Image (cartoon, rainbow, N blue to C red):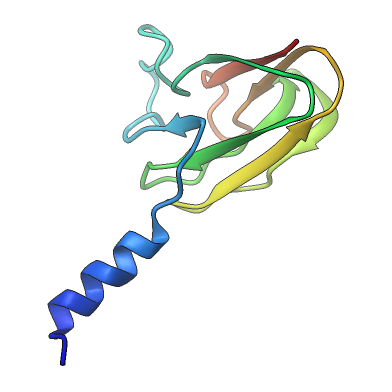
Length: 114
């Protein structure tokens, strides 16, 4: 019979989601934009029809919202992502898709669909 610590490790590993873009720890404070590490990678290139998954690895809430902080485009919005929650979106049309975090305006990224 597994011990409680074994069960906890199993449950934790079940929660790990593989992501294409990561929101790392401590990006809820200004400064990540200086090194361009608010979303890692901050720019991703994918083929048309492919899905992109963002994973919030921070202890703060974040979002993936299309456009820019002062000009959202309403193409997509993850809503607030809890810590370790993910958001996936399939891009069916070629183009450049800018996005940001509604809670932390310095967090910006881009998906380039070819």
